Image 1 (cartoon, helix red, strand yellow):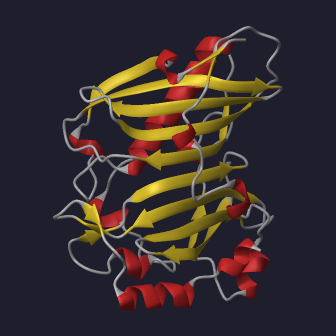
Image 2: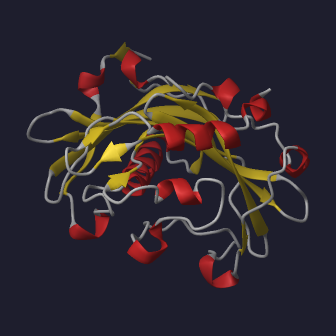
Length: 288
């Protein structure tokens, strides 16, 4: 297998940012970047190997915001493969400037093992590696009792219903929808932070999600949220989603978000009162 630089990435899609992918900050929402890159990576694996799987580890750097109508290009390449796992690097770039909008490193867990096959591998750029979210900061060992010990209760509860599932009873992957009235959470420790000041928002600059299985029909999912760290302009917060009956961890979602002025389109240092609040509710001990 040969390894080459990212100039040999396979172009998977080209489009202009549509109105239904613009969020409350007036740019393409992070959920749409993640969905497009993930679906593209799965299509690439199916095209190369005829296999399907679950994206079990998804790391993202968000580089430059993209506004309505911006021309984008999704490209990807395989960075490694072993047994039942395939690693993929993907990037979404502005098709006119060539500047990256977002970079992704994805670990896909296949539904069957990969037999010996010759295929080109690429080397992902060093800048795409995790910066603030290495694996040891993701705390996949946590269970509901850990949150109860530090005074954190579940803030959402959702039952997976049959109409949301496929013929096998697994939750279907569907394109996200931006619904303004539902976009900003109203529960959880960050609920008040997201609405701290008019004209200021919290775009993500880095994200990492671990998925341990696809939710199934009848699962009842409970979510626990925590602030794990605060520094300068940025906040590290995360959600852990458990199946209520078994206590099994289904997914962990980590975000590094920055305090952002929508008028200047720049991040700013956290105001002293907000910084004090966040430091007061932070539970870094969960990572221990």
